[in-house]
Image (tube, rainbow, N blue to C red):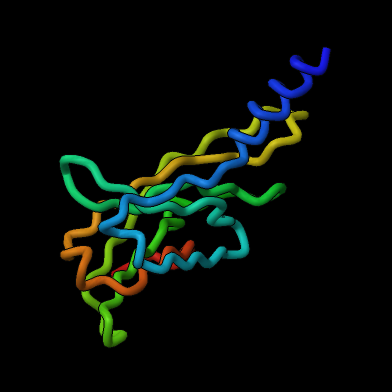
Length: 132
């Protein structure tokens, strides 16, 4: 019985372990900002064959609707604080079934076209205003 309990603790502990970014992007700070209708829930850095990306999930706040204009603004800042680039990320919202306790959860992934060594910080902000 102890073995089973120990195995369960080990498995659950592994589920709570944070994902570490690759070493070449570990120095980059990540910040997130929610809007009244959308919460930027998770944010993480990664790298694949296409380059460096920011990925995570957004949650629609309970009792709110998501307008077509809602999106994520991803801004990349350099070592001196200057803006090196920005992207606007769209995502598909997941409908919430009637009587379901969970909020609508959606995933996002945005590729960054700046050399990772030049980046100091990346901001991910939920934005409800349409861009011109």
